[in-house]
Amino acid sequence: MLVTDRFSLRTGGHCDMIDITPEVEGRLSRSGAREGTVTLFVPGSTAGITTIEYEPGLIADFKAMWERLAPSDIAYDHDRRWGDGNGYSHVRASLLGPSLAVPFAEGRLALGDWQQIVLVDFDNRPRSRQVVVQIAGQ
Image (cartoon, rainbow, N blue to C red; front, side, top):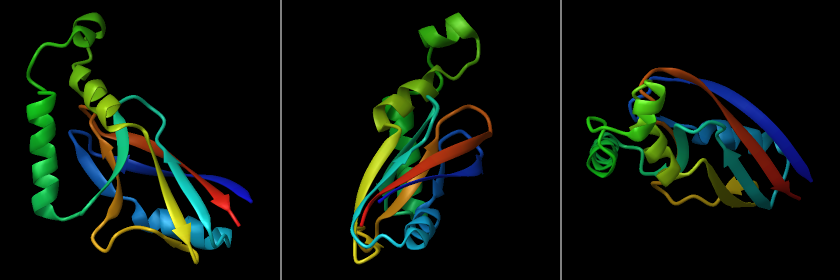
Protein backbone atom coordinates (compact mmCIF):
# COMPACT_ATOMS: atom_id res chain seq x y z
CA MET A 1 0.00 0.00 0.00
CA LEU A 2 1.15 3.51 -0.80
CA VAL A 3 -0.74 6.54 0.53
CA THR A 4 0.28 10.12 -0.20
CA ASP A 5 -1.29 12.98 1.73
CA ARG A 6 -0.54 16.64 2.57
CA PHE A 7 -1.31 19.04 5.35
CA SER A 8 -0.76 22.78 5.74
CA LEU A 9 0.33 24.89 8.68
CA ARG A 10 1.23 28.50 9.42
CA THR A 11 4.68 29.26 10.77
CA GLY A 12 6.25 32.32 12.34
CA GLY A 13 9.63 32.04 10.62
CA HIS A 14 12.86 32.87 12.48
CA CYS A 15 13.54 29.23 13.49
CA ASP A 16 9.92 28.58 14.43
CA MET A 17 9.61 24.92 15.45
CA ILE A 18 6.28 23.09 15.25
CA ASP A 19 5.59 19.61 16.60
CA ILE A 20 3.89 17.76 13.73
CA THR A 21 3.90 14.33 15.40
CA PRO A 22 0.13 14.31 16.08
CA GLU A 23 -0.61 15.12 12.42
CA VAL A 24 1.64 12.30 11.23
CA GLU A 25 0.22 9.82 13.76
CA GLY A 26 -3.33 10.70 12.68
CA ARG A 27 -2.57 10.11 9.02
CA LEU A 28 -0.84 6.83 9.82
CA SER A 29 -3.83 5.68 11.89
CA ARG A 30 -6.32 6.57 9.14
CA SER A 31 -4.24 4.72 6.54
CA GLY A 32 -4.76 1.40 8.31
CA ALA A 33 -1.16 0.35 7.61
CA ARG A 34 0.46 -1.70 10.37
CA GLU A 35 4.11 -1.92 9.27
CA GLY A 36 6.25 0.16 6.94
CA THR A 37 7.75 3.61 6.63
CA VAL A 38 6.39 7.13 6.77
CA THR A 39 8.32 9.64 4.67
CA LEU A 40 7.83 13.35 5.31
CA PHE A 41 8.89 16.15 2.98
CA VAL A 42 8.53 19.94 3.16
CA PRO A 43 8.63 21.67 -0.24
CA GLY A 44 10.63 24.88 -0.27
CA SER A 45 14.19 25.88 0.45
CA THR A 46 13.92 27.64 3.82
CA ALA A 47 12.38 24.94 6.06
CA GLY A 48 13.35 21.47 7.21
CA ILE A 49 12.12 18.44 9.16
CA THR A 50 13.85 16.53 11.95
CA THR A 51 13.22 14.90 15.32
CA ILE A 52 13.93 16.45 18.71
CA GLU A 53 12.83 16.31 22.31
CA TYR A 54 10.27 19.09 22.00
CA GLU A 55 10.79 20.97 25.26
CA PRO A 56 11.52 24.68 25.87
CA GLY A 57 15.16 24.30 26.91
CA LEU A 58 16.15 22.20 23.93
CA ILE A 59 14.14 24.40 21.55
CA ALA A 60 16.14 27.42 22.81
CA ASP A 61 19.41 25.47 22.49
CA PHE A 62 18.48 24.45 18.94
CA LYS A 63 17.80 28.05 17.91
CA ALA A 64 21.06 29.24 19.50
CA MET A 65 23.01 26.51 17.70
CA TRP A 66 21.69 27.69 14.32
CA GLU A 67 22.65 31.27 15.11
CA ARG A 68 26.21 30.14 15.85
CA LEU A 69 26.38 27.86 12.78
CA ALA A 70 24.76 30.14 10.16
CA PRO A 71 24.39 33.60 11.71
CA SER A 72 21.50 35.78 10.58
CA ASP A 73 23.50 39.00 10.92
CA ILE A 74 26.30 38.41 8.39
CA ALA A 75 26.40 39.07 4.64
CA TYR A 76 25.28 36.30 2.28
CA ASP A 77 25.76 36.37 -1.50
CA HIS A 78 22.14 35.28 -1.87
CA ASP A 79 21.02 38.49 -0.15
CA ARG A 80 23.22 40.65 -2.37
CA ARG A 81 21.72 39.02 -5.45
CA TRP A 82 18.04 38.90 -4.42
CA GLY A 83 17.78 41.47 -1.63
CA ASP A 84 15.40 39.38 0.47
CA GLY A 85 17.60 39.07 3.56
CA ASN A 86 17.08 35.34 4.03
CA GLY A 87 20.36 33.86 2.84
CA TYR A 88 20.92 32.38 6.28
CA SER A 89 17.51 30.66 6.03
CA HIS A 90 18.53 28.81 2.88
CA VAL A 91 21.85 27.73 4.39
CA ARG A 92 20.21 26.45 7.58
CA ALA A 93 17.48 24.57 5.73
CA SER A 94 19.97 22.89 3.42
CA LEU A 95 21.96 21.68 6.41
CA LEU A 96 18.91 20.31 8.23
CA GLY A 97 17.28 18.80 5.14
CA PRO A 98 13.70 18.79 3.84
CA SER A 99 12.74 15.18 4.59
CA LEU A 100 12.62 12.45 7.19
CA ALA A 101 11.81 8.73 7.09
CA VAL A 102 10.31 7.09 10.19
CA PRO A 103 9.60 3.37 10.39
CA PHE A 104 6.42 2.11 12.02
CA ALA A 105 5.28 -1.25 13.42
CA GLU A 106 1.95 -2.38 14.82
CA GLY A 107 0.51 0.89 13.49
CA ARG A 108 2.79 3.05 15.67
CA LEU A 109 5.70 5.29 14.76
CA ALA A 110 9.02 3.89 16.03
CA LEU A 111 9.90 7.08 17.90
CA GLY A 112 11.71 7.17 21.23
CA ASP A 113 9.90 8.17 24.42
CA TRP A 114 11.05 11.78 24.22
CA GLN A 115 11.27 12.11 20.44
CA GLN A 116 8.89 14.21 18.36
CA ILE A 117 8.81 15.06 14.66
CA VAL A 118 9.18 18.78 14.04
CA LEU A 119 9.05 21.18 11.14
CA VAL A 120 11.51 24.08 11.47
CA ASP A 121 10.88 27.25 9.48
CA PHE A 122 14.09 29.24 9.08
CA ASP A 123 12.70 31.99 6.83
CA ASN A 124 12.73 35.62 7.93
CA ARG A 125 8.94 35.97 7.86
CA PRO A 126 5.79 33.96 8.63
CA ARG A 127 4.87 31.41 5.98
CA SER A 128 2.21 28.93 4.99
CA ARG A 129 3.92 25.54 4.71
CA GLN A 130 2.86 22.23 3.22
CA VAL A 131 4.08 18.87 4.47
CA VAL A 132 3.89 15.84 2.18
CA VAL A 133 3.26 12.58 4.05
CA GLN A 134 3.84 9.33 2.19
CA ILE A 135 3.01 6.06 3.93
CA ALA A 136 4.49 2.89 2.43
CA GLY A 137 3.43 -0.24 4.23
CA GLN A 138 1.00 -3.04 4.75
